[in-house]
Amino acid sequence: MGRVEHDYYAVLGVLPDATPKEITTAYRKLAMQFHPDVNPSDEAKERMPLLNEAYAVLGNAEKRKQYDAREPEMRLAPIPNRSRLVVQRVGASVGVTRKMDVILDGEVIGSLPMGGSIRFLIEPGQYTLQFKLDMTTSKVQRFTCQAGMTIGFASGAASPMEYLFHSVVKPETALFVHRIL
Image (cartoon, rainbow, N blue to C red; front, top):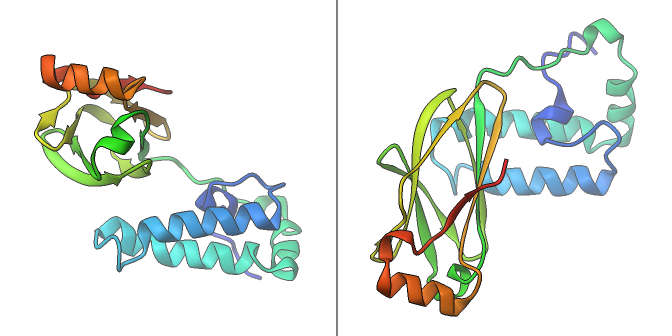
């Protein structure tokens, strides 16, 4: 089989004991995020072929068995040199508007659909995060990340009334950003 250069389980974000259904679900979710028709970024161009390669092996029972049986020294763990930023859109904001922009260090890096979740690979360091929903922008959130770390943020409000109240009275805090490490 040759020298394996990637940990396919890590590429798909599943554990080695994942079921075939979990592997397929993980692949489809990532493929929808990084498919060139949806995501024209350089990161997507790099990740999509690797996702396909990982799924071609782990999604096939015989190839997966061969992959799992390889010599221990052939099992290379990826060296983390980036961090993962996970943003999830929850709460009442889901029903109020269709899209929400994610702003990292003042630059829009993506949009969240209603009830959606998106992931970005970012370099380790210090960042600011904001969300823009229609005419409302959340307060700035500052965070620091190290290589290999996953940082999660959820945005939303506890109820439609709370969302609408804060949107009118205090627009700068309408989105309630919470760190969900």
